Image (tube, rainbow, N blue to C red; front, side, top):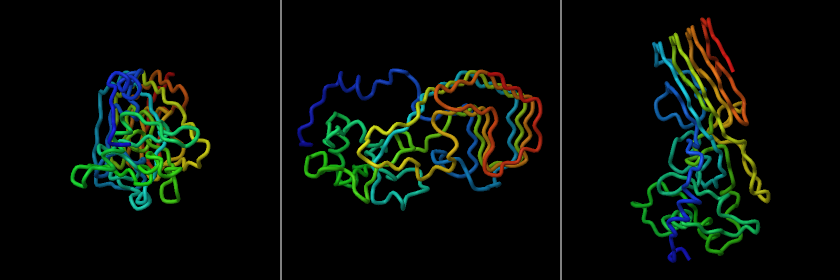
Length: 278
């Protein structure tokens, strides 16, 4: 089956790749200062790390950030629990480039595979690719067998459904004007943040016949989501001095709005002239 792949370019572009809203579908930042080593795609930093010191942001204006944060459902793999805490490398079943195999889009109400050009290509590489050219592909043999009607379901004890991430299975997080993690001696002065818009919708279970784990294994905060907006967010940070801050017109269509948010033992030593107008 997977050897006979046909592509309708126009239909594929329309149905698979056409971002009609022309907005980012992941979380977004005006400014991100990520103290720990490595990328910032996992949960909000929850461990103290004060090797990063002395940050000044002054006379800064952030205008008109818009995003449509989405959460998708993925299939775990046999190494999911071993890879908790890692940034990439197949924590769920993904293709050669690291994008999810989107099970919600390719399964019908009778648990049968609904082929499309993208999913076929993902499965083809997973089945026929050699180790050196499969990239990050971690699509399981069970998923391939299911797509070829050799088994009734792509799910078993080792391959369960899980959500809480975006299309690369990065932890879904809010839209931030400024996010600062794991810093000490921080000064923000004369900061203006205007017109942040979040259009993300809350996750819905589209596969009612299946139990779905709803918390990304790398998530660290349960009180924020892809639908929210944070003007300025601090985590695991100390010695914070913020003054003359103006945050205006934040809009979250389906979520919550926080002007200034702190988490994980953050210590703000001075805070004055904070104006929030919504």
